[in-house]
Image (tube, rainbow, N blue to C red):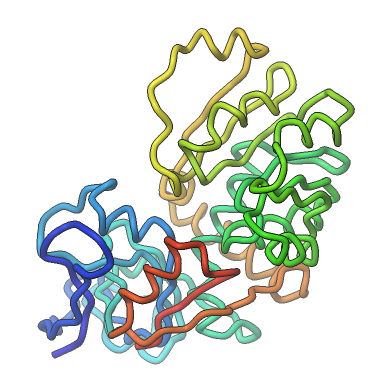
Amino acid sequence: MSQAVRIHETGGPEVLRLETVDLPEPGPGQARVRHTAVGINYIDTYHRTGVYPLPSLPHGLGTEASGVVEALGSGVEDLAVGARVTYISGVPGTYAEHGLVPADRLVPIPDDVTDEVAAAALLKGMTVEYLVRRTYRVTKGETVLLHAAAGGVGLIACQWLREIGARVIGTVSTEEKAAIAEAHGCTHPIVYTQEDFVERVREITGGAGVPVVYDSVGASTFEKSLDCLEPRGLYVGFGNASGKPPPFDMGLLAQKGSLFLTRPTLFDYVRARRDLLASANHLFGLIGTGEIKIDVRQRWPLAEAAEAHRALESRQTVGASVLVP
């Protein structure tokens, strides 16, 4: 038997329950992983509330974990029991002591990366990788706008963009978060609760705007983000922390300068195993050299997953957070 956090209905953090579940043997092509650290991501709250519907209820939550391979199914040849691995799951359920995972989705953890860092970094770090290298390939000297710059994705993005040589304008909610974002490579933190970020972006860029906006906030920042773009700029919406942006007239993109808009997801960028490993290895390489530091600032046991969600949704967290089975 094993312990897992599940929901029987959608709703607030109070619907999270720690339950005893069966511990099945791995089938063909699968591995059973004993979790040592579980990543917490904002997408988990979307699954809990029903913004992103789960396949059925009751159901587990969580899309990211690290641990040790405990058992292997038939046909798995390039993986050994005892190996340290990390993974992201397209089907939520990593808030648990164990995970049953397709072996080709597991990523080896390098010796110089801890299980906790891997669990805190994989989903967020690979998200940053595809955003700044593949959705829009940021180059040295460019200026970009990044919302939620002091969040888990934001702090990795600030460091990655600094490593590229880009200038980062980042929005945050408090002076404390502004200082943290700046320490991680944000060139121009903007406290959006104190000043209008559109005016500041235009001021910083001499009225030109930016070529790309990375927005994980959604509804409350969507239209104003379009006003920050230069002609033919790209709006990249990769999250909905404030809710989904409302429907809009596509003519607005023409009115604001022949703008482009995309709504990417990580799983489409790492669908092939070669892409998964390339993205993860690029991330772990930067962590290994110290170019990117993963700041795990919050830890909760599985039984306190609800508290973790309350902290995340009230914007009390900074950097990365993990559950410890």
